[in-house]
Image (cartoon, rainbow, N blue to C red; front, side, top):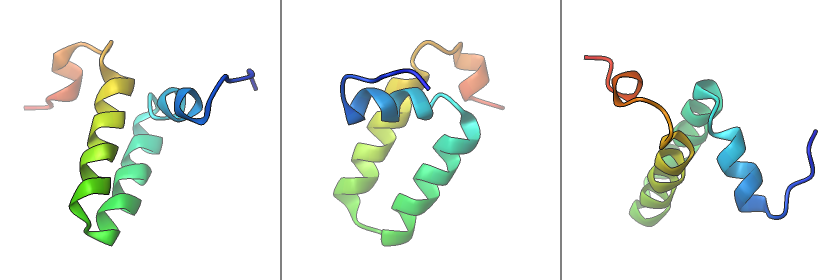
Amino acid sequence: MPAYKSYHSYLIESLKDPAEAAAYLDAVLEDGELEPILLALKNVAEARRNYPLAKLNPM
């Protein structure tokens, strides 16, 4: 496992895996609080920003 400079960089790298991102969002959504949900969405978007838009939108 590579060394990370911060928890945030580790989190963003982990969230590049769609299964990890889904589990992360599920856990945050269970709580139902708006602020953590918005932060989680921001983190997932940051992790996936290099992915083509077509991969993010399955329609």
